[in-house]
Amino acid sequence: MMQSIAWAVAALVALPVIAYLALLGINRHDEPPSADAEQLVAMKRDRPLLADAANGYIHALGMAAGTDVDPVALGGARNAYIETFVSTSAADGNPSLPGRNVDYRAARSPGVVALAAACREDDRACAKALDADPGALAQWLASEQWLLDRYRRMLATVAWREAIPGDANAPLADYLHALEGQKLHLLAAWQSAQARDPAAVRDLLEQDLVFWREVLASSDLLISKMVAVAAARRNFAFGNLALRELPQELANAAVPPSWRQPLTLAERSLARVLGGEWQVIAASLRMVMAPEAQAGSARGLAERLQRPLFQEQATLNLFAARLVELGAMSELPYPDVAQALDGLPGQHDKSLPRLRPYNLAGSALVSMEPPGYVNYIARTADLEGERRALLLAATLRGAGTQRDDMAAAVRDASLRSPYDQAPFEWDADSGAVVFSGLGTRLSTPRTAWRIAVH
Image 1 (cartoon, rainbow, N blue to C red):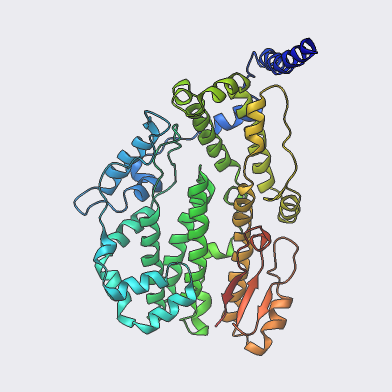
Image 2: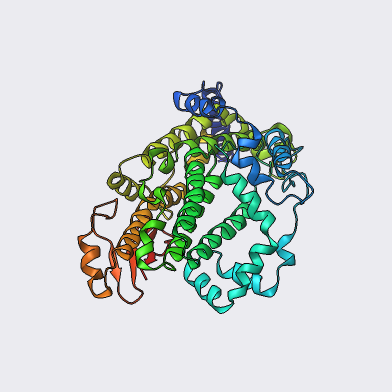
């Protein structure tokens, strides 16, 4: 009896050991880079160089430099710091960019603080704040003219080339100050509309959107792509606010040409930024799986046992295949994008991950990838529907369409949803054209896009 128990215990101990040894045999060698991985490597390697003064990204990095500091020089130093940053350990997080920013927001008067808060995103709240305190805008523009001047120098640059960090702990670029400059620029357009100057309104809106559409097409990371999406939406919303200040006979003259141009494939594609994200994933894997990182971990023994079951390049190949597929999905015709996103596993999908003996740890890691990329594809694709709804509102306003005729005019308009060519909705209560894009159907939905006509 005791001998049988001993054999049973020995078998229970031996089986996991044998299985582990078998896995070690299967995982003796890593894979070579796949075609997808080579494609993503080439995206970063083959980017053309760009002089700092001509690079909008450099201007954005140095936007809030002290008034006695050259913002381009500081932006260039920060760009170099991000590109060459090397952390000393996996715990070496939250490093700061070199140089000091001006804390200009602390010097704002209460009226400017209230206006800046109201004009953060909501054009309707901004309109109410402008009416409530007519002098706040002039005070804001006067006190931060230096920031507006720097923002406009950024708009005058010819291209965008950002740093793709090679270290997972490298600091992120800060676009807050560029977006603060955009508020000033767009509210100056509103001021020009009050002065009945449609040409100035058109030119200011055009300069702004042309720049951010270039960022949309040239971004290498999701953060800059989503900043450009947010900046384009703000241009639409606050540009519409400015056009509503003009009399009907001047409205058409204020519409910027870029509002009439459909988004290009490069502008709505996420293929390039997902290539940059793959580089960040590679940097993170190198850091987490480094021997010194595992040696200092509280789970050191378990992680050391898992390490031989992790193949770095094979894992990167799996991520590359996933990201290249998502990038191609973002470039599908609009009706197909909607259908493809509907077919992806959702955030609450309970299906078991697909594991395999080779690269067991890596395949488990890839299977845990969150489906957040779906949100980014939808958010970017929705820009085209928002542009069309905006242009329709501007067209109806310029044509002098009466409120009672709006529902029929919206229904019969040639400007329609890019996903199914259905007409936009008309909300009589708010007097707005309504676009319900893909973002309204996500697990964390965004509200429908509303653009007021009058």
